[in-house]
Length: 216
Image 1 (cartoon, rainbow, N blue to C red):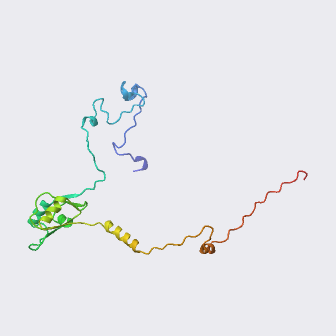
Image 2 (tube, one colour; image 1 turned 90 degrees about the horizontal axis):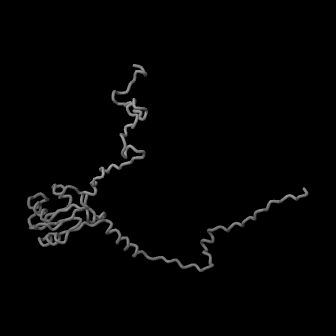
Image 3 (cartoon, helix red, strand yellow; image 1 turned 90 degrees about the vertical axis):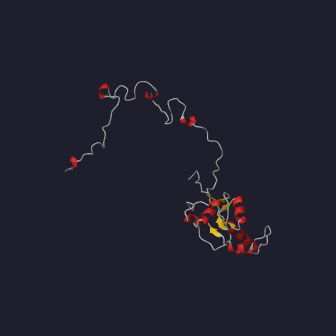
């Protein structure tokens, strides 16, 4: 095989069609645009969603009304009744008799009760609680907290590091002694700054060029 024997694969390259070159060429008179109509004119541009004049799809479907909070944080939701049921089945970590059953997001994920740890865990008040539970979550509804505490359990909210760091920093700043420098009178130079700053250099006057006399 030589260089001039190389050929593209069959069907990989199509022959270029030349339009508007006479009737005998096959694409001569109307150049493939058909006769008359908007698409046969110069500069025809029809949007992809145009449906020929009938009512378009975005006008046929009902309007989606309401408000969508873009700042909403998605949460993993679970009801206290579901937690109590799985605790009774032994799906969670067993506890001694009379001791509350410990429940948190990691234990629920390990037991296959929730699907992911990506979002915060929020406990709602659906169902009944028949045993003491020690639940640690990111948020509780008022009904969920009341049912857990009524059964002898505890509802603990996780603390974020940012919530405790800010008050500690403020307390540290308030405890530090305040240092106030005495004001400097107007026109009085600071002795430290006077020693550090060098004396300003005198400006040189620019010499004017000497113009030759007319008689020279």
